[in-house]
Amino acid sequence: MPRIRSKNPRALLTPAALHILLSLADEDRHGYAIRGVIEERTGGQLDLGPGTLYEALHRMVESKWIRVVEGGDGRKKTYTLTSAGREELDVELRRLDEILSFARDHALFPATRSVG
Image (tube, rainbow, N blue to C red; front, side):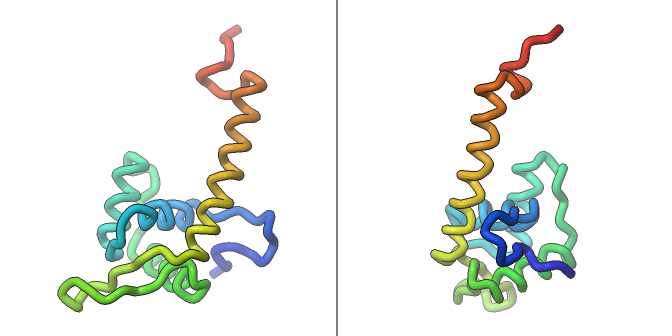
């Protein structure tokens, strides 16, 4: 399976990685809760199966973007965002913001584009 992000600083986060980091930005969560937040936020358009989700979580722990924290009943791993993960999220959000700003400024964004 490919890495979540290459060593190239211009590489993009995968949709799964981006949404996992977003789901942990405001609260520590276990895997099932992460999946639920992502499904709700995307209106079901991104439905991460258990294999995809837990493989991504494992790779993100290895990359030190997230870590497992103690808590809960001990049966579920709870994940928290690390400072490295926050930095990755910030870089990606700035990149996406630049893209959307360009699209709006050039009337390419659907809300600003004239029909005709």
